[in-house]
Each structure stands twice: as structure tokens, then as C-alpha cells.
Image 1 (cartoon, rainbow, N blue to C red):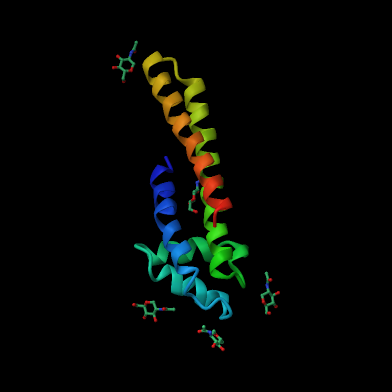
Image 2 (image 1 turned 30 degrees about the vertical axis):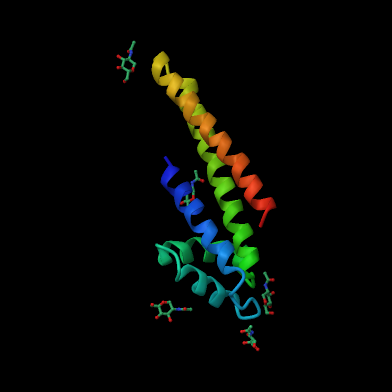
Length: 120
Ligand SMILES: *[C@@H]1O[C@H](CO)[C@@H](O)[C@H](O)[C@H]1NC(C)=O
Ligand SMILES: *[C@@H]1O[C@H](CO)[C@@H](O)[C@H](O)[C@H]1NC(C)=O
Ligand SMILES: *[C@@H]1O[C@H](CO)[C@@H](O)[C@H](O)[C@H]1NC(C)=O
Ligand SMILES: *[C@@H]1O[C@H](CO)[C@@H](O)[C@H](O)[C@H]1NC(C)=O
Ligand SMILES: *[C@@H]1O[C@H](CO)[C@@H](O)[C@H](O)[C@H]1NC(C)=O
């Protein structure tokens, strides 16, 4: 359900990381968000997501990179719960198998996101 959202986060993540080295972090937070989001594929989605989170206030580029990973983690976690409930209510064995597979891939994404967060 939110697979594309996760892909977007994973896609913009390296952008945030690479930009964190050349964005002036002393300037106002809205301006940091704008500067960074302006360089992503979907600036309006990026600014909307970041601005709607209180942690983006006064945030440096580094803070925003952490925030993006945290949002992706929260999103993936919620999606795993959704997939798991679909898995539990599915009677068809082959579909059940695919839900289990899908859940396993999402679990794996949590691991990678955790690693990404630690290496920022
Ligand atoms: C960052 O912004 C501050 C305030 O606008 C400015 O004084 C400083 O020179 C800037 N630093 C860089 C590296 O651009
Ligand atoms: C973002 O991009 C738009 C259009 O290219 C430009 O008008 C605006 O000044 C940019 N904002 C920042 C903060 O770079
Ligand atoms: C952001 O900075 C402004 C001005 O320094 C301050 O009033 C405000 O409390 C800060 N917000 C957060 C969430 O730190
Ligand atoms: C995932 O993130 C998007 C964008 O912030 C949000 O619209 C959506 O509700 C989130 N999904 C879940 C399951 O948390
Ligand atoms: C299970 O789902 C698959 C894929 O939709 C379908 O092809 C298959 O016929 C279903 N099996 C049963 C026993 O309903």
C-alpha cells in the first residue's frame, strides 16, 4: 500500500545525505527545507511532508536526514502491520504465502533503514 512512498523516501535519502555537506545549516529552517526539497524529484511532496512535522522546525540538513529516515521507519512499520493483518485474514494458501514474503521484505527494509540512520 505504501510501497511507493517508501521508495520515494529511499530515493530522496541519498539526496539529503549528499546535500548535507553543502547546505548552509545556519540559515532558517524553512529555507533549508526549501533548498533541499527543491533538489528532489517532487519538491511539493517533500516540503509538505517535512513541514508538517514539528521536528523540521529549526532543523539542519543533518537533522532533516535523520527525520526522513525516521518517517520512512514509521511508514514501513505501519505498512508491516497492515500486511500482517492481511496475512492473518487470508484463507488462500498461495496468497498467504505472498503476504508472508511481502512482510519479510518490509522487515528487511527496517534493518536497512536502521543501518542508514546509524551511518548518517
Ligand atoms: C551561512 O549563512 C550565514 C547567515 O546567512 C552567513 O553569515 C554565512 O557566511 C553562511 N556560510 C556559508 C558557508 O555560506
Ligand atoms: C526553489 O525553486 C524555485 C523554482 O526553481 C525557485 O523559484 C526558488 O527560489 C527555489 N527556492 C530555494 C529556496 O532555492
Ligand atoms: C526555533 O527557533 C525559534 C527562534 O530561535 C525559537 O523561538 C523556537 O522555539 C525554535 N523551535 C524549536 C522547535 O526549537
Ligand atoms: C506514510 O507516509 C505518508 C506521507 O507522510 C502518509 O501520507 C501515509 O499515511 C503514511 N502511511 C502509513 C501507513 O503510515
Ligand atoms: C488462490 O489465489 C490464487 C491467486 O488469486 C488463485 O489463482 C487460486 O485459484 C486461489 N486458490 C483457491 C483455492 O481459491
